Length: 252
Image (cartoon, rainbow, N blue to C red; front, side, top):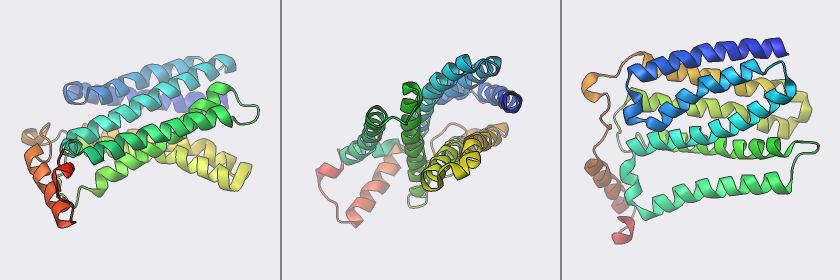
């Protein structure tokens, strides 16, 4: 098991270094600084895990604390990209209330569940990170799904970089969720699937991020949002009027 883990970590480290090189080359730090920080943190985290893989206690602490940090940073990075594309939606109070309210509610419920109902014989840190991690993965999947769901109605023009970032988070969040659901429904019979669902989905997410940044975006569109804020606001207000929502309350 330690050998297999070391091999997976080594492959992951190589891909993460490659991703960081591409992020630097594409000047991602200027436009998506949080996602750049996320990409910058991946390598050192994997390296720390690789160096401690033979010492279970140290590896345990390194893995779970770094996992908590990456989960929160990943959620912030996904939000950053979502806001860059759909920034006009934040003009509406009901969207801000629903969006931030859902994030807050999911995290609070996850933390409460971890404190009130910890798994039997589980370390408190593991319990907290597992529950909050499931909540964050659920939020990432939800934000990514919302991102794609409103692209077509608003005729949002394709942009390689944000599209790839969001898709990578969607795929990487699917593994932990599927593993959790499988264990919840079928119990320990699917423990093998649950163990590898998360790393496999993470590798797929890495591959998507690499494919998004390995080819540069068309230069005149590279870092221009796919729709101007004014046009997007006009489109959203038009949809709201068509659905019967009128009044200033939908505009501020």
